[in-house]
Length: 235
Length: 235
DNA sequence: GAGTGGTCTAGACCACTGT
DNA sequence: CAGTGGTCTAGACCACTCT
Image (spheres, chains in turn red, brown, cyan, green):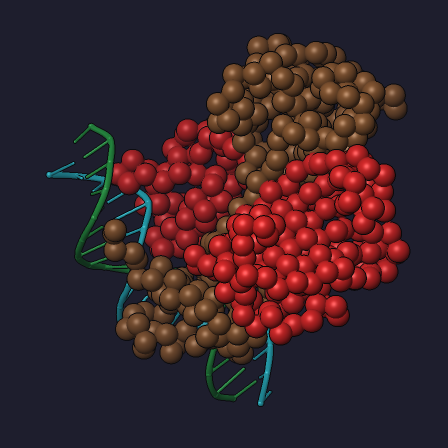
C-alpha cells in the first residue's frame, strides 16, 4: 500500500460520500474554498480533485453557484476492443488466420456499401476468417481506404490480419461501433461453418482520422463463440 | 468560436502531431521542460496538457526517461446505455411498459442465477416488457438485491420500470456489461412475439456499489429492434 | 456587484529510475 | 546521482452568473 497523493485522497473522500448517499443527487458539495480549509491545502489541489470528479461525470460544476452531485441520466461504460488474436489466445485456444479474398477497386456504385461509407475513391476490399482451435471464431469483411492509407496497397494480407496491421501502422482519432444480432445468411453460414439462420453477433466499426475515413469492418461471430464485455469505468 | 485554454491548445497540438504521424508510436515527445520554453508558460500548464494525453492513453509517461507515444494495443470506446424509455422515444415510437411478474424471495438454490450472482440474501425478482409502438422492444428479467436496496421492497413496479427507478434512487459505482447474441427459446419467443430460434441481442448488466451487488438484469431484444452504438471517446 | 470556478505563475520538494 | 515526472504552494486575474 503506497500513500496516495492528497488530491487523490480528497477525490476518493468526496466520491465515497456521494456514493454512500450523504450527498444525494442535486446536492451542492462544499466550495473549493471550504475544502482548502478542511484539508489544509491550496486551492489548486482541491481543484484537481473536484475536476477529476467532474470528468467522471459524478458532479456538475456551475460558476457562481458551486458544484453539484450529478443526476445520472444515462450509464456509460468503457468497451475494450482487443485484437482478435489476443482475444482467442486469452481463451487458451490456438489462433489461425486465413485470407479469403483481396481486391483493390476504384469505388463505384457496384461495390459494397462499406467501401462507399468511408468516402474513399480507391479501396482495398478484404474478406478473411479467424479461427479458434479449428472452429471459425469470426468472419471479417473489410474495406480500407487507399485514399487515406495508400501504403495498404503494397501489403499482402495473407500473413497478417488487416486489423493488426492497421493498429500498428495507422493512428486514428475517432471510431464508431455498432453491435447487433443477426441470422446467418446462406453464404455467411457456409463460411462460418454453422447452419443457415443461426444467430450471430455482428460488430461493425468505422474508423476515421480527422475527416478522412480509414476503414470499415464487419465482424460476424457465431453466437456461441463470443460476447462483448464492457466495464463501467469508475474514473 | 471561443478561445481555448492554453493547456488545451497544447494538448490538441501534441495530439495532432501524434495522429499525423510526426511522432510515431514509441517516440519520445519533448520533455515538459522543453515545452515550457516552446509555449512560454509554466511547467504546471504543460503538465496539465501532457497528463490529459496520458489519461487518453495516447502517451505513456516514465520517470527519468520521458513521455512516449503509446503503441495502441487495444481500442476502447465509450458505450452509452440510456434509459429504455428514452431509447424508444428517440426513435419516434410510442413507449409502453408492462410488468409481467414481481416476486420477493429469500435467495435459495432454486432461484434464478441472477439472484445469486449479486450475492443477496433477499431479492426482488422482476419480469417485464418494454414496447415500441405495440411491438415488443425488449424483455427484461431482473433481480434487485433487497439486502443492498431494502427500499425496493416497498415499490410497486407496475407504474415505473425498475431501471428507471434504480437510476433515480440508487447510486452505483461499478457495472459490467456483457453483450451477446442468442436464439430465442420457446418461452421467450412467445413473450417477445417472435418465432422460436429467431436471433436476439442480449445485454446482461451487473451493478455494484462498493462490494455490495445491487442488481442483475438481462435484456433481450429481437435482432431487428435494436443495436448498441459505441463511440470512441477522443479524450 | 460579488463570489464562484477556470486558468495560470514561478517557484519548491520528492520519489523514482536510468546511466 | 542526476534528471525526469508527480505533487504541492500561495498567490493572481478573469469570465461567468446568480442575486
